[in-house]
Length: 316
Image 1 (cartoon, rainbow, N blue to C red):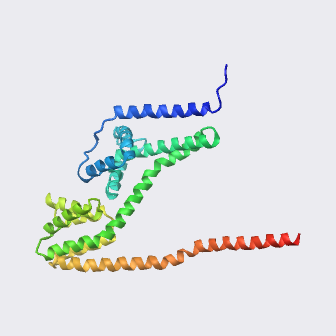
Image 2: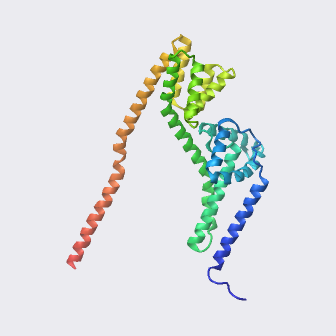
Image 3: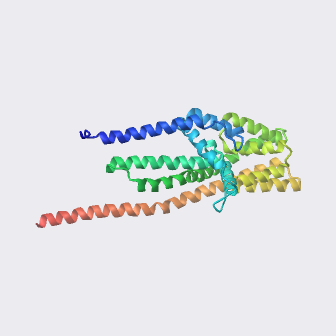
């Protein structure tokens, strides 16, 4: 039997991977529906999904595969293997809302993205170990694949933190516009509508404007202003926002003009942010001492080591 020419086994392995990927891609594109069944996609999440599909080619390619896994997660019972799936799904839904709908995913789609991430990292490390060692290292690829399932959770926590920082940063400017509108003679709801409309025209991804838009929608459907603001504090875990909403609720009870209360709160929030920045700046000098000590130690070892080697060379 004639032997294979050198390098042919690698070519065959690559051809198998490419054919498998193409077959699986055709399966996904052909059998997975475009519609999401477990809950409607509407509003900002629908707009964000359309924009991501248009701007991000990788997202558009991965989304059908995410739908495939989401379909199976959707069919899981509320109690599965001792886990409360309904409670975990509600927890993911709450975290997705707080993150500003990361990836425009539903809870089931988020779990599907975890599976896609796991498979992608597993395949990538399988291919890299094959290139480095000459054979695919399945155990190593499996370990990194399992870690890849957790990666979207880390990204979700990071998105929540970044969105909270952006809300704290944008809060004084949004309230400034609200106060100016109320000083011009508008009531709270009309002024809020003006701020939200102008904000969405300038930057539809502004998280502060998005949250104020939710407050406005709740008030339009009949929710009391106090309840809508309390719901805002429950969605956004911001100390600045809680302080402002608490002052608004107190002003309603005491009959204090709302515009005056908001002006005082704006000044307080800005002072707190300034103090926080100054504290972080003062702590930076202390935190940088650790890396500097290691750098100084490395330089010291390099200098002393070269001196010792030179002395030994001269002695010999």
